[in-house]
Amino acid sequence: MWSKPFNNFSILNKVIIGIALLIIAAYVAPYYILGEDAHIRVHDNMDSNIVWYKLLAESGQIFTLTDTTLPNVMNGLPRSALPSGFDAMVWMYTLFEPMTAYAIGQTFMRLAAFFGMYFLLKHHAIRSDKQQVLCIGAALAFALLPFWPSGMLSIAGLPLALHCFLMIRGEGKSAKIYYWITLGVIPFFSNFVLSFVFFLAVIGLIWLIDWIREKRSNWVFFSAIAMMSAIYIVKNYLLIFSMFFESGFTSHRYALDLGHNSFERSMDLTLENFLYGHTHDLAEQFLIILPVIGFAFALAAYRNIKPYWLLSLFCFNFLLSLWYAFWYWEGWRIVKDNVMVANTFNFARIHFFDPAIWYICFALALAIIWKHMRLGKIIAIVLIVAQCYHLFPLNEENKYSEFDTPTFKEFYAEPLFEEIKEYIGEDPSSYRVVSIGMHPTIAQYNGFYTLDTYNNSFPLEYKEAFREVIAGELEKSPSLENYFDTWGGRLYMYVAEHGENYLFTKDRNDPIEKLDINTTALKELGGDYILSAVPIENYAELGLTFESEFEKAELPWEIFLYRVD
Image (cartoon, rainbow, N blue to C red):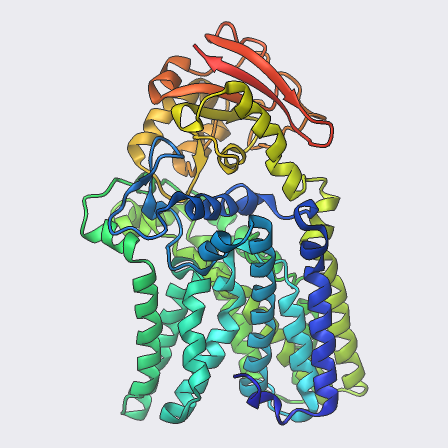
């Protein structure tokens, strides 16, 4: 359906697009070549989302009419805390093995990022046929970004969605059907609360401004906004139902106490985000893009050019960084303490717009250099190549193999945990475990029923009960205590001397000399076993029985199994 937009391309542009697609193919190739031996991101990925999809795919509760619970996690994790049954990735994990589903998802995300940014730039920013190489190059660079993998089109799909909305806005009833289809598909590959709630608000504001300026309403444009919003509402039916039509549960998010930064720290955070980005929306703008934009401004001033859109978007991105940083400013506490939605919902997430805006700015700056500088065409192309050369090594295999993190297969270590299950000799549903020195999602992935977890939302009552188990360790570490009490999305068996490190592989598993946990409280929660990646020297004092040690030469973990008596 996208064939028509390509009809007017020159042969050269088609060749360049072909080269760009080959580069993207090389970028994602490690997923397919290495399979489970590939290195991928741990944080907010292997430690969470991948396992959430797998649990849901295997639960038999992909679709439920009420907010039931999944017994695998914390004696009953509310179904609404996991992705919607209308989330396309849930079905990918249902149809394929986890690593295969992951690889397909990452490939789709980068293709959507490339074509979305390309069409956006070509049709709305740089329309000159002679400068199409800039559109292709900037789009390729955008597609090579180290996107947060589990975000899917929440960030990578924003240019594609914007392009479709702008085409419908401009063409009205004559807009091609594939724009509507695309807007209808994107919600199934993206997260409403992460970015698209803000995106649709901005698009709605554009519609409202058009109405005020032109004294008439563009109802076709409005219908597109309403359609996408309605799809998101239907997709998130269970969350909405649990919030408004059922008593449900009191989420731990109601007790969040974030945002105590000083004014000075907030200003520092503004600059940090503006210059370097956030871990979930890295744009890698500091080294090349920012200097290019700065040079383009200087060149525009010298040539007496007014780069309105470049300046506007550049300033808008700074305002997004300012808003993001000051959302955590202590001055907001009076609002957050009195308006519940301000405390439970993260309005700072609008900063997820940053990467798309940076690459639009990059393309606009290159267009100025291309047109108004001697040898500008060559310089612009060299700068694109330089940015892509900078980004390509940031693919997950290169990046995380250098960090010496486990591969997918090593992280989940299925043969090792299968051996532990065989040793225990009972159905996993008949006992409960917690993990020390490693993410509890590893045990969840391998079919264990865990009392500890990492999730975006769960009952506050359970968090308070779990806190009793780890209170002794929290008291020894003010930073961990603050982390758990003010946020607490990770219900982990914290160890003060470990801090926020949860990867204690067998090459660094020094024993815990004195673990201060409440095993009585753990037993009351239903805890039967502790899977520890490090030895616990005072296990007998805690009322634990050492069962056995498990290790496989090819896997990074050495697991010490303790029974809670």
